[in-house]
Image (cartoon, rainbow, N blue to C red; front, side):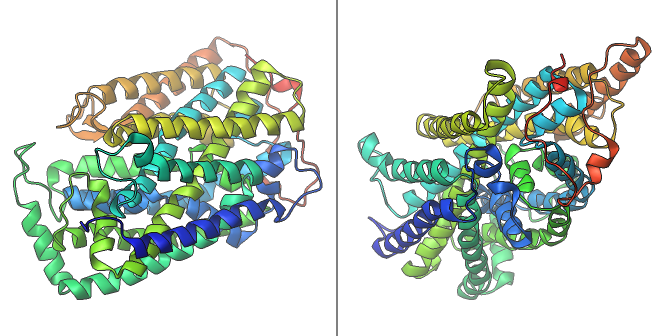
Length: 540
């Protein structure tokens, strides 16, 4: 690690940071609507984005600074097991092709802003809607925190903020400034800010990856030497576990873990509120369908990005915090000016998803807690004001999480968030195709999945943590290690199906479905978006 502040890299970083800050504030004038005081405008960008804007927005939303740092860091720490992120991002696109256009259509038809809006309208249940909303907010908070962790990793490598003995305020001041700027332009411009900035973010990331995958192997003697160095490093014994550090190919004992983690993560990805927010901002059903066919380009980029973990080993990078491995690789291998470009890519890669996530969480609170339970007669302007304020509070909470807790804890809580958000799948995706599931059965299945997933994750220990040390545990009845979230999901579905049979047989009261079959295939040209949800949805 270089001593002191890397002035050239910092100057380049600041240049790009200032550029996207200006873009963030100017975004409020981009596609400005006559009436900006509605969640459709502030929280969904007027539902007006075309194919390329949506592609960049979804890419900026899904492939975050945490992805940029954590995926190769997982390869650096444990080997090929960290590649699970590549197959899961391949699996997800055929899956979302089947249900995202249906969600867009019914949401456009009825003015739904959140997944909880749809669940309430489909099943006529405020309780189920509240469960989905609370789960979404809880799962999103640590995800936002990890974007700030990504920025902090870059600042640490550039030497900004001083050493460990520096006053806490001075040490964290750069992160506080970045947070303040993010909060300000998100409040001002809403979803238009990250949509505009995503162009810069993704362009920088593609440039950095293209250069890194060519330039760094040349400096390290080629991929043969890189893989040989990595294989030798993985064969060394990890003192904390007494086992080899990792492997270039996942061992047979880890195959269930690898497969279930990839599948469970694929099912969970588009359950996150920020993924749906970016989706609903598009202007037509066809935009969504086209995006599911071109988004896999990001998976190609992700596969190349993962190789940086092997390069960090071959380059002799030694860091106590694995999240610093890739920023440190960039500083050691690139000229200072291009290291600044790479750091800017990571930093901006944190700002875009953090903005979308905070907007998505705020929309959930406003629509499905504030309006449903606190102020049912809230106007569109009042909804927008509350959502803006809550987006600030969400970011403050994420910042407090980062500044007061160990970074490992933040990562593990994000893993827990993945387990939680997967439990909303039956209500959301199931509801898009059938009304057969009973609302009470869905709520009970969700509760079982949440409890099992949380308790199982609590029992997982790691060399550094007694509880919540990972997201894998033994699968009941199989004796294999697997992803807790997928096991909880299976229990969720079983409980939902069994109780639906019971409740249907007992003729338990069903909620009112405000949707019709044609709503799920409607496009932008079809008549009427209903912004206000009708009273008929206010079920138990």
